[in-house]
Image (cartoon, rainbow, N blue to C red):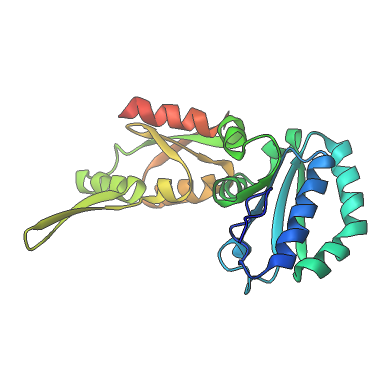
Length: 231
């Protein structure tokens, strides 16, 4: 079989030729309508057949493009749904509104979604996008030494060595900060996405640490550089 030219459609089963053709046509139309970066995400990329819908995340230049694209989709989406055989769901965002989108959800979509349209690479957007984060410094001076050690393990994870016969394995267990998409930037300082800050602050205060917080804007690249300085 000759591979179809155009977008990345490896997540669509080979037997779904009609769906692939329709999706290729839809992607070309989206690019002609000004989509700078278009992705599919969610259940459809793991199991196309059982997914209840195909979810699209579309990034355009400005709000005027959002309105125009939404209007076009309202008229045309039924035609594509009949050809593809599944409901289609669209989230459309302008570049200047991305910073207001749920940070953790946006990070998940851009990181895990498959790009099918647009000239701007999703990783370029992910690296450069400034999102609201919270800088948290905390004081553990009132805690016992063993409590401080336990707190750091829960926050930043642990590395364990497992011996099986003559083989030695290292395993890493993620801490809370890794799970919420944050980063440790100093001995008693960390940054976390704003929408997950309350969870981290509550965790610290429950264990007896005093917290001091400040809202800041950071990109994924900013956080990566902070981590490198700690290595």
